[in-house]
Amino acid sequence: MNYQPIIGMEVHVELNTKSKMFCGCSADFFGVPPNTNVCPVCLGMPGVLPVINQKAVEYTIMTGLALNCAIQPHNVFARKNYFYPDLPKGYQISQYELPLCLDGFINIQTEDSDIAKRVRIRRVHLEEDTGKLTHVNDHSLVDLNRAGVPLMEIVTEADLHSAEEAYAYVTKLRQIVRYLGVSTGDMEKGAMRCEVNLSLQNVETGEWGTKVEIKNLNSFRAVRNSIAYEIERQHRVLAEGGVIEQTTRGWDENRGVTFLQRSKEGDTGYRYFPEPDLPPLELDPAWIEQIKASLPELPDAKLLRYTAAYDLTRKEAAVLVEDAAVADYYERVVAATRDSTGVTPKLISNWVSGELFRLLTDSNTNIAEVKIKPEHLVALVELVNTNAINQPAAKKIFGAMFATGRPPEVLVQEMGLQQMSDEGELVGIVQQVIADHPGPVEQFKGGKDTAIQFLMGQVMRATRGKANPQLAEQMLRRQLQG
Image (cartoon, rainbow, N blue to C red; front, top):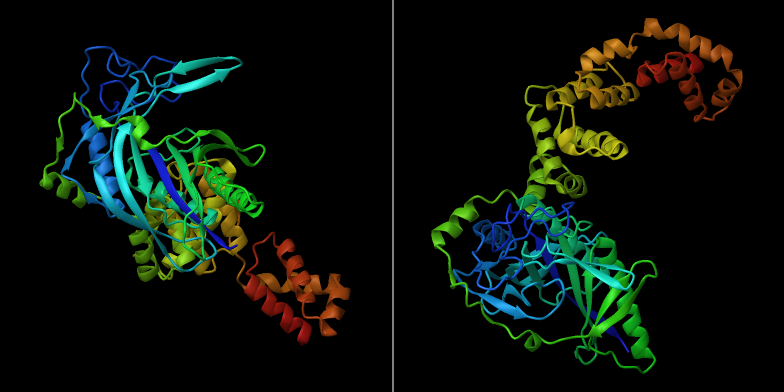
């Protein structure tokens, strides 16, 4: 029997606010001693009253707009009742029937497809995070520093049909929240956590199978691998005549399997009702328009502009726009090319996505820490274009620029890497190389054209990489064919 995976995603995103969702405690809990960023409000003490964090509401509206959602001027916070040790009040303040954002979409693209796929966003709502439990042997320790931190939940329709599509969706979502500056999207630190709802649809009848939820996925790898495994598991169960039960499952990264956690609760188990301590939230439409006008250029729009204005391929542009800080650096370098000769945005793209990315990775450096000034990178490319230095020398100079931030003209002189582009300088070296290597010379004369590469290497070695490669090859061929 033929089945198609039906996948919906729920992604929780912690917001980059200074204070918590309903109190003035710091929302910065990472690395802070346990249970120090707490107060009677986020501890759920009797008689305390919550106050809505305006910045969290603004960030959620920004995200909803970026996801093409309709923003609801009238929305309500609700109590979601359940009991767990990391939930100090015994309920979570969330949104249920009347969330902030509804009916949006984003477009995704997998690595093996050139066609964009639309994923519908059902809702984006705002709530508070729980605390954190640490299990030690037969004890559990609770840290409530995270309790009350603003948390945005983004829920899709069941529009995804593979592990690769789910992976593309969550990476695109993280890219968007980072562009907006509303969250770090750092999954290793818990700033973005994913849940998957997955079932198999009978392609012949159209009937959907029983839904299984995979909880608390904290890496892109876990999202992709857990879905791939769960699809295979459900196929196997059905092929053997078994029945898929509605359960919540976890992901064991070490074993590469999903495992049973508990039977799934329905929404009725949470006993939602309007939060009595918070009035309905009425948003000024003018404020929503003001937020909309302040949105930055988003990745999709930036990618289209790069391909149109800078003559980049979609793949080249995608590499640059992946990170907003990288795109900003690239554009500052492109702006510095206005008074240059022959330095194009495509050449700059090659240097940024090539040598710069390599050095950033090797040195574990952030793009914000790069010492190379945009005008210095342009000057380096100009030196290559005018044959003042060759490409190998340019890479050495680029490395020195990365380490010191000094201009390329100075480094060329200090490192003695001026290109030898005068035939008078090279003629003696070329003749000596031919005289010293009769074997490759005879191979070339016998018709083995690739032998020229060995001789070229000897010229470059003799000039310590400073010879103009094109000129050196021309001179070698003239001497050998003369």
